[in-house]
Length: 172
Ligand code: SF4
Ligand code: SF4
Image 1 (cartoon, rainbow, N blue to C red):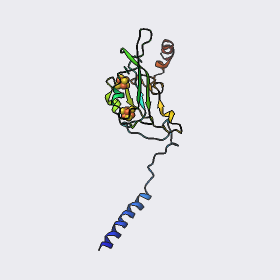
Image 2: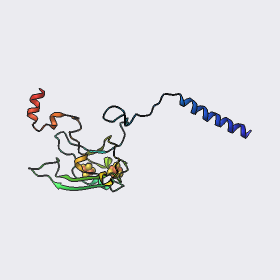
Image 3: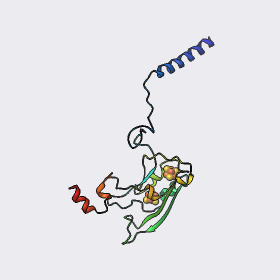
Image 4: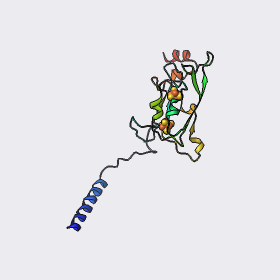
């Protein structure tokens, strides 16, 4: 009786295997696919490389409060704060992050830093191609993490232009 049960279980398992063999392939065609993600497909909730966001005026949202670094269980965020001045305003608050590094050798993409941030300055993006032979390449600096434009503007060429007035006249 036991033998028959085992044979039935094996037959059931193999039937699933053979059935799946004739189904269409559903794997992602990464890295040979089309588009900027080269065939990779992400859910919206995917936690990838961090992005340091800008506010609606283009200023950095990070105010160097260190809460993200305090919440990080891997101790992989390094921040140096500096004071804003009238001549050199980087964020809308008193301070800004002069240095903001994330060490992706240690980051576990838990999202605690994102949860802890009071200004929504740090978020997860969808960047994922981190593999490298050199571990020092995994220490990302602020300049690599900063959003080019405010989140609500997306890829806004006018915002990036060195002369916004001239750009406006072109796009009118
Ligand atoms: S995702 Fe987690 S481990 Fe990575 S920097 Fe944020 S808090 Fe630290
Ligand atoms: S990213 Fe957010 S939590 Fe971290 S220092 Fe900047 S403002 Fe504070």
